[in-house]
Image 1 (cartoon, helix red, strand yellow):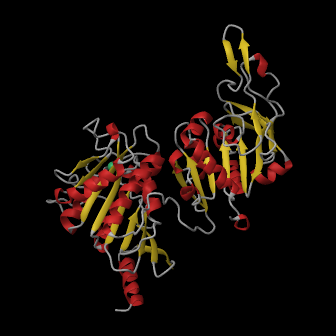
Image 2 (cartoon, protein in one colour; image 1 turned 135 degrees about the horizontal axis):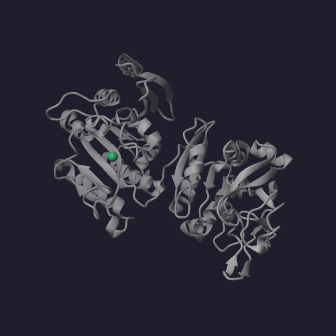
Length: 509
Ligand SMILES: [Zn+2]
């Protein structure tokens, strides 16, 4: 059978089971990428993506997001689906329980009161039950069967480290006894970077849990199937997604699906018309509100990144890095001096940087932990406050709304005009710094009212810049002191800021 005929048959099979096909495109070499949605139009519809290398090799299925409160699995799967495979075929179902993921709930929301069905990873056929219990799992099971996978990896997260709390399977690789050796290799690799009390354990005594997709794939399809579990307790998504990528990359290398380590592959190599955004979520970052306004949009891809990701081979995959609110000093420390230099190199070569509140402190040149992306000082003088001792003036009290006026230039960049009330929580009060070698900033908005709890703070905030822009090498930097993302009706300002700093084709390295 010719290749094109085989492809046509491949398509017909999908259409016959009512899967709507979104797009087919041919990548570099002869790879064929296909994408589609199971159950299109149904409330539970769920997307898939397949890459056929057209080189002899195994078919591998990666599934994630069966449990909606386990985000790292689906974040990693959304990244893995773009990996360049060297042989075989890769099929990824990144967000099976799409509604649960949106609601951050373990269960399928439509079945939350149905104890027998609400846990999608108990819905699949068992040794004594042929029935698949929910429509989404019926579609997934049919689709996976059609792939005839030789390998299946299902990405999950536990609530605690199995090593410390046996009630959770967090940080483990779950495998059938026959696959214990392969699974232990994944544990060994991922554990290279993990503290002793948080290390991954091999759980291969009885295999994946009854009713799980992985167990069904092992028992019914004779696929080598695994459940990979990270732990969501006190670890950022960036780290957990990295652990998933590392385990999956190790497995793919071993199987021969890829020919080089893909742990550091987060974003697609090329994404025309799409802004690739790295959102910092490591120590000192409160990224949730920013994530909400930039996530899940057709014009952007968002990946969580941590301090260890601030290195050239990861940064170069992105158009923009966003440092959210939280603690500037903690974010600066999590990045470290050497990698702060990598962030500057990224900007120098045309990368965009947006810093919000703590992230704006980070963009300044004021502190030892600053990124030094613009010549900007921060008002943080210390004063003796009667009855309270010596206090630094950066702290101005609980979050409040202040008046912010956007300049006419700012209006074109930020997409909002004039004076409005914006959430403020101790963002930096910026002024020109003392390093003339660094880029000068241009104010795009000014504070027109102020917040403060100490006498010496009076009149130190009004008419100072609230949003500033600078050009660093070929890259653009935008530092935003207040929280537009937390201000009703002003959330889109963050997207405009990202769009402004995104690397332009004509500025590219
Ligand atoms: Zn799970």
